[in-house]
Image 1: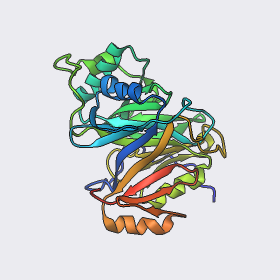
Image 2: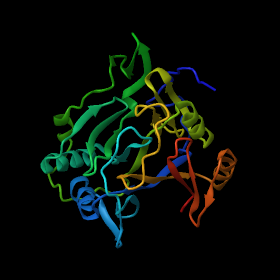
Image 3: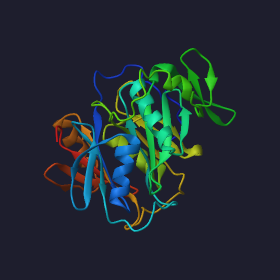
Length: 305
């Protein structure tokens, strides 16, 4: 079934739920050089090394793993495949966001700071070419997304309109910092806030994640993109696009890529309700491994796991 274009509000929902129905656990990545990638996540982004093994490293905050990297890839990230477009690390406050920005600038990392209005974003590539986004949620600045002259535009809360892809005011962000100490790791409360995926079939992917309980937010087949929220004020938790090509195959083994990402539905009842929508699911001690219609692997974790 083909879904029509929709331009419902992307930045916020009219009546957000008291809490969101899902959150993200760790994103697992295959990398070519474990030491180099550890240095990237620890020294450049500011995550804390939580556990290390012969072939894996867990990184995150003092209390939660956000990214797990696995050695074994022999080639860098490959285009023209379904898989991860980017994972997004969301710091809790603008000064925390600014500290990561300053750390990245001092490291000399190539950046694309972008103002989406619903968020302030920094895009960059990891050492293997996997895209990472650092995101500050600002849904209060946005009213809605509209179509005009064949393009999408963002209406700000004050009624002004912009592309939603303008350069970020970096100096204004940095001005929120009270000090310039970039040795401070990211604080507790920093989390994986959204995951954006390349898929081979937009309709199938959109309906799959809606079946897990994510709420439809934006669906524009002419631009090959769809967004879904989790019921909260920031209505952008799962995004899917066909920018790597209709029917794009899954990223091959042996390349730097996402192994799987973790979704935690908020209740056991919601998890049980989602299971019948899955074509196949393998039970593990922490939840159920499954995949979306494009082969992107997901761990549906037990609440609290």
